[in-house]
Amino acid sequence: MRIRTRRRLSRGAAYAVFAAVVLTVALAADWGKLADSFFRTDVAADMFPTVVTTALLNTVIYTVLAFVFGLVVGLALALARLSTVAPYRWFATAYIEVFRGLPALLVLFLVGYGIPLAFPDREIPGGVYGSVTLGLGATAAAYTAETLRAGIQAVPRGQSEAARSLGMSAPRAMVSIVLPQALRIVLPPLTNEFVSLTKDTSLVYVLGVTAGTIELTKYAGDVLNQRVNATPLVVAGLLYLVITLPLSQVVRHLERRSARAVR
Image (cartoon, rainbow, N blue to C red; front, side, top):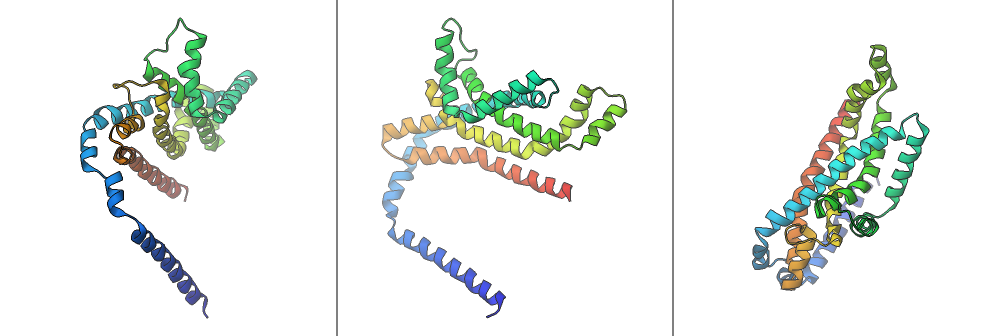
């Protein structure tokens, strides 16, 4: 038997197995029960417009605040990690290793309950929004720092040397020459970090959110408890996908452009 024929038969067998599995599941499923449990239009309709104007909006706000905080702090950590000053490198390395090793949920607990216990006479500015920015942003900064460091080191050393030969100082060469190129390199992984932060906002409930600061997962859980139906989870999942799927497409587009630029 020819190699091409064997490949064709193997591919056909794989399709047949897949079709058999799908058909078995389709015949075994109780579609009426599934529709009543997960796709109740009346339950979904009752969630609007609050699920969009409050829960979804807060989810986006939490994500943007934490991402901006993580990007700014992460850039400072990346530069410190590459610094020739040893204490800066030690501090940046310790921060990155610690916060990459801690779960985001634990960091939120530390920010929401540990800091108020340690400093009872002080409050985090911004209430829940400030706590989320600090908690999720501190974790994101550790991952962003390593991403930016890799991007900076990926820029050819000749770029900074050429800038220095033109009379630029080291800081100016970094800001004007190296960082723009590094950001273009690391844009896809930074977009992935934004997507990850969007999902991490589901942990915000541990801070004790109110009706005005509630996010998607908490809102869906509250409606689930009230209506004893799983439709709110489906609605929340679809709204998360409204945020993350376009970003995933952006990442793939940027990766294709980067690949073409390399070729």
